[in-house]
Length: 311
Image 1 (cartoon, rainbow, N blue to C red):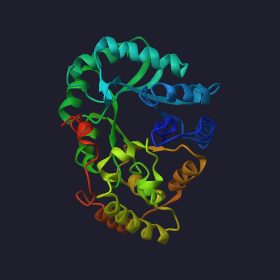
Image 2 (image 1 turned 60 degrees about the horizontal axis):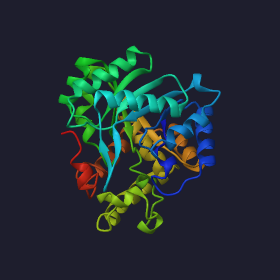
Image 3 (image 1 turned 135 degrees about the vertical axis):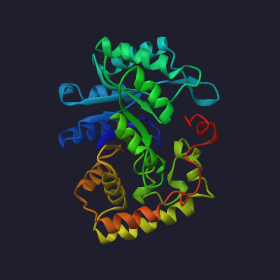
Image 4 (image 1 turned 120 degrees about the horizontal axis):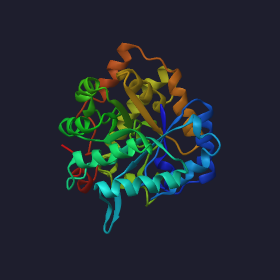
């Protein structure tokens, strides 16, 4: 389990920096030493927040950050993975994080305008310079990963993986072949699998989930019905829906690290409780069948973002 910090920078509405700092400190105290951020999260705010949180304890922390998103008019973001920008973005992240080295540095999304070999070549130079320890990519195809891996070893790939996004299961063997770890983001489906989101009115107008088809008014009730069935199973294990969903994910493959986002202490404590939930094979299979591919309504992303995925 790692700590995802995306939601600490206004992704799901207004947040409290002081509470976020408490969450990071509690996570570190509980042994979660991998913090996941990106220059895109709050356009620098998130990295600066983490720098404050780990002041005086950097030696015990693994930092994971990303580059590649840039502001663009009329769109959530644009893409830039030119070699010169890779170096520029890394220097900016190092400054905001107040560190001299990033443990895991990811390309946030594939830039179709720049060959992956050129981008990874620039990232490899950062490793040689001691500014980055290991390299990662996000949501890339097998073909792209092979090309990148031939330039420099890729240590991890970030992909969305949860009960309601399971396409990655077909590639787990491929990642094993290359020795690449999987970092699963949104393991609770942006909070949906917690069962605590009961209506769209609970989300602020600025909440990014409002732009996700799975949260559209025509899809949300159908997906909530699936989550409620998960909640009924959770009652038998005396745990929460979120804990059951994470416990299921932990069983799927030993090479998967869940990026568990938390922006309040109750959310963090709920996630930590998943580590104590022990599922049997039969229950795991029942849950898998309940959320088998095709059961969830709506695409993962808005069409503008969906077309940016590397096929």
